[in-house]
Amino acid sequence: MAKKVLITGGAGFIGSALSRHLQELGHEVFVLDDLSFGRRELAGVDDAHFFRVDIRDRAATQEAIATIGPQWVLHLAAVHFIPYCNEHPVEAAAINITGTMNVLDACAEAEQVFVASTAAVYPIADGALAEAHPTGPLDIYGITKLATERLASEFHLRTVVPTIVGRFFNAFGPNETNPHLIPEIQRQVLSGARTLKLGNLDPKRDFIHTEDMGRAMALLLEKGLKGFDTFNIGRGIEYSVREIVDAFERQLGEKLRIDVDPARVRKVERMHLLADVGKLKRVTGWEPKWGIDEGVATLLKERRDL
Ligand SMILES: NC(=O)c1ccc[n+]([C@@H]2O[C@H](COP(=O)([O-])OP(=O)(O)OC[C@H]3O[C@@H](n4cnc5c(N)ncnc54)[C@H](O)[C@@H]3O)[C@@H](O)[C@H]2O)c1
Image (cartoon, rainbow, N blue to C red):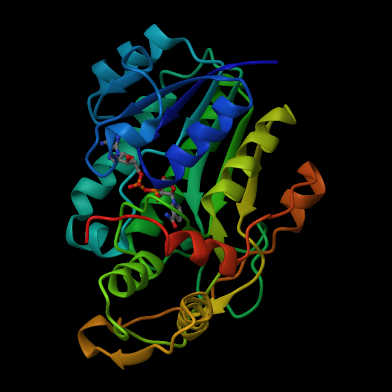
């Protein structure tokens, strides 16, 4: 049945793919976003469904959510680019922790709440990470998101509203808003470079397409789970930076050289970050549709401001 849905951060990279998908399913989507990282046109809703609000502003957040009266709330608004969070730790905590409190405190009447977390809550580990693995964030961003998860759990205990935490692994797809690895390679290739300047080439990440993420979130909410639960949202395959460059080479049909730029090499680096997505698949029947090659092929056709 069609729901009234609020997406915070719905003008961002993942939120905009989610907004499109939920509207395709027939839901009425509202977006709340301050446009600090997102873009208005990405939200994909008309002005009556768009609320430009900073979630640090408790009164404005509560007023907007009371006006909307959503049945489902998907809380994605956050700052998440790790170098930005490291440089602005107080701002990261204000948005990701206090902002989350402001949103959740206005959601006691919702039927279901979904809160976006991250694989960055896990410690360094070699194998695939399941949800029961102990947490151990390494950076300010991961710490604020672990706090987000705890706030979601406390919200559920207090209100009994069914609440899901989704631990997102590395998203890729169109409309990236932050200079992560794949959009950085995309930017360099589309601007004509055939020698790429990159950091460490060996770390592996689990890349999931934003469309696959949107489907996973919708399926989780459609299940109508009761209680509080946590799900990894990843693809279950990891690729090194070099393997991502190989995918660009295959799609371009051209050789790419790599110039390791010492300024881009991180001091502390996780060598692996891989999701065990068995629980998500078991509970929802979800399967990813996008592979890395199809994803890279669409990115090479995307027009971007370079
Ligand atoms: N992109 C990834 O690979 C990834 C991985 C793990 C988790 N996540 C999580 O997924 C969510 C969405 O990330 P994304 O990649 O789409 O990033 P994004 O920056 O594109 O989206 C976040 C959105 O939140 C908005 N926002 C930021 N501060 C706000 C504030 N104070 N008030 C209102 N809106 C605000 C931004 O304008 C933006 O549109 C975040 O919670 C992030 O932590 C992302």
